Each structure stands twice: as C-alpha cells, then as structure tokens.
Amino acid sequence: MNTAHRTCLLSVTLGLLLAACGGGSAQSAGVGIGGTGKPGITIGTVESGAGLTVNDIAFMTTAATVQIDGQVAQPSDLKHGHVAVIEGSVEGATGVAETVTVDEVVKGTLQARPAANLLTVQGLSVEIDDRTVYGSGLASADSLLIGDLLEVWGFVKGPGLVRATRIERESSLSEIEIVGIVSNVDTGADTFEIGAQTIDYSGADMSDVPGGDPANGDLVSVEGAAALGGGGEVVATSVELLDLEDAPDNDDTSIEGFVTALQSSTRFELGGVVVETTAQTEYVGGVALDVVLGAELEVHGSLAAGVLTARRIEFEGSVEIEGDVSQIAGNLISIQGLPGLVIQVDGLTEFDGDAASLADIALGDHLKLDARIVGGSTVVAIEVEEGDADTTISLQGPVAAMPAPADPLFSILGVVVDTSTIAAGKFEGPDGAPLARGTFFALLVPGRLVEVKGDLVGGNPVWDEAELEDE
Image 1 (cartoon, rainbow, N blue to C red):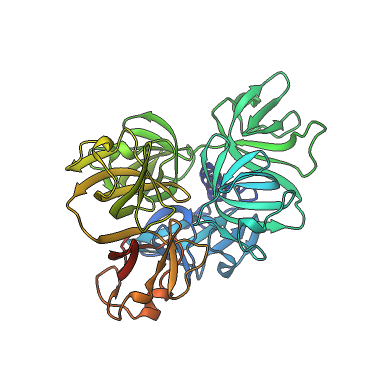
Image 2 (cartoon, rainbow, N blue to C red):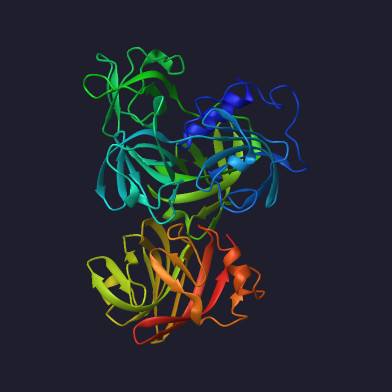
C-alpha cells in the first residue's frame, strides 16, 4: 500500500473523507520525508493566520503536495477549519510538510435543524459551536436553509454524530460522502445505517471490507450517488473499512479528535485510532479519569502497527474559571458575570477547599474551577475548589470564531469579553511579556487559548488583564 493510500485511511479514520487520495508520494518512491526533524504524521484543524499551523505545529509548505477534496491545490487554498492530514518532519513546534490532504466528514443535504447547536446533514447529527467556521456567503448557521447542499469538515464524535470545524454551502454536489460508525447491518438486504441514513451497499465496491459485509461498530467511509434511492437510501458506490494497520510507523504522531470508544483503563479509540497509555503518559488540562466518551483530546506519541502509544494527552480547550456562584440548578452551576456559560458537575468532578460535594456549594460562594468543553457554552467541571469571598473573576478558554475577534471585543464560550477597560501593558504573551493592544488582537486567532482577569463590579466583570496562554 503506497503512502498516499495510507494517508487516505489515516485521515478518514479521524472523520475525514479522502477518497481521492491517488498516486504515490516521494516517500513511497523510496525517498525519505524531508526536513531536519523526525518523520511524523499530524492530523488536526487548520488554524487561521499566515502559513499552515496544525496542533500548534507551524509547517513549512514550500515543497508540499496539497490535495483538497481529491484535487491538486496550493497551500494558500487551505482554510481555517479544514481538517488536514500532514506527512512530513516535525521538530518541536515546527515542521516541514511533504503532503497535506484535506476533505470532508460529510457532504450532503441539510435536512433539519433540531436544536440551535445541531444540524442534520444526510442523516448525521452535526454539532456546531462557537469554534465552527463558515465559508464564503455564510455569516453563521443562521444563514443556512433546509435543503442547502453542504460540505462539512470535522471529526467523528460518536455514532451518527460529528462536530463541525468548517461548513461551506455548495450550488451542486456530484456525489454524497459520509464517514461514520456502522449500525443496524442487514446482510440479507445489503444495507446498514450511519446515524439516521440508510446505506444500500448491494452494488458498492466492498473489496476493502473483509467478507464483503461491514459489522456494527465499524468505522467506514461511504461514497454514493448524488441521487438517493427510492426509499431515501444512499446508493453506495464504495465502502471502505477504516483502520491504521498499514499506516507507517513513526515516533511523532499527533492526532486531534474525540474519544469514540473505551476498551480498558489504558486503551481507548480516538475517532477510530487505537490509543494506549502508559505510566509515563503526561496529561495536560485533565487527568486519566477525564478520558471519557466524547472527550476532545490531542494525543502525541509514537505509532506502531496501527496503535498510538501516548506520550502526552492534552484536553482541548482547557477551561479555568473563577467567580461567584449566581445559580445552581440540579447539577448545573452558573457564575455571576459570565452569562450563558454552563458548568456541569458529574460523578468524576473532584471537590477541594471548603466543599466536599455539590451539596456544599451555595449561591454567592467563590469558586475556582478547572473544566473541559463538551459543546457550545457548556463545560464539565474536573475540579471545584471553594475559597474565601473575593471580587476576583477570571476566565480561560478558546477564543470563538463567531463573532470574529475585533478590538476591543472577543468571545470565550459565549461570554463577550470587552477589553476596553484593560490598560496598556496589561496585554501579555505566553511568556508573560507585555504586548501592544494591536499585537495582541493580531495574534488572537479563533481557537487560541486566552485568560482574562478582572473584578466583579455591580454584578459585571471589569477586565484588567488579558494573556495569551501556551497550548
């Protein structure tokens, strides 16, 4: 199997559909991956700004071969919110890309919008949040109409569920493409389902599926005719079973995605990729117990025989909150001055300080919380510490894509941060060095982790410090 096809399998395993990955690469022809770093595979969301940055690695693309939707493209065609598979060399926070491949997780018709943060596209539930980026002509999800033809980039999050990183509207589609987890296989009728979409594979190329029939729980890539069958089914032209058994071994793989299966306390699947942890695995922004179904992670490690052994696991969108409790409803907490931000407490939440459980928390209590994002403006508390009364308020989280940051405003998890009260010298970089206001906002790309601090005055935050965080 050549490198391009291995990349194809690798990418779709994480929720991309790179069915047009044809041809060989320099590596498959016997030439090693270029650059001075170690050969590696990087899979994640393309960040905005100059150049190509994925998983906090800035790649040189001068000699890179780029494919988008199976077509040869230029590095300048890569857009914020694309999910890219990069083969190249990596050395710390920099790399040299040899191949960059991008394609959708689903391509089809917008059928419904059952909730503000949820779309139904070709039978799949597509989760949107304030990090989702929209293509030309779309200001937000509110610009979409039922019946629109969409291309969606993102990650498989669970059965029938994906999270969108970018959405574009198209005037026509030549085919339907779906990546997802198989359910309700009927070998007699040659059908199965992905989410609410029935797939007819009776005439499909099944050469990549052992025995010719998929099994419930398999992660597959489906291509089908643009015209649906008489019963609304996708008439598949090809079905590929996705695994990493033939992916090239290397010591520098980094993958962004969601936990889609738990096999044991030390083994889980990240969008279909098997990940193993060891006693030496480092956890950033959480602990081992926080690796639960649906958790959004970035895993760095070595790949061998299709299994990624994790050196470091980063919990994406690490959230830190400090402030006074304004509301408690069941297992949900709200913080005064941070409207719309919902903090969920579950059975894994740890309590420190004066509180041993949620029952010990009362209105007006001053809390410090570590949390992880579960969607939209909702986070799950990892650790809650109750302390003495204080007017301090702080929020750390990823900057929202919509609305785009524009001096003096940006948003974190639905909370609008007005920096007009922050004095010169109080904007800082990751190293703590002061930044000019204009420089700070120039670096404030969507998804960038930022912490703001201030005081609660009259029930509202008055921010006096903003700092870009290491990620």
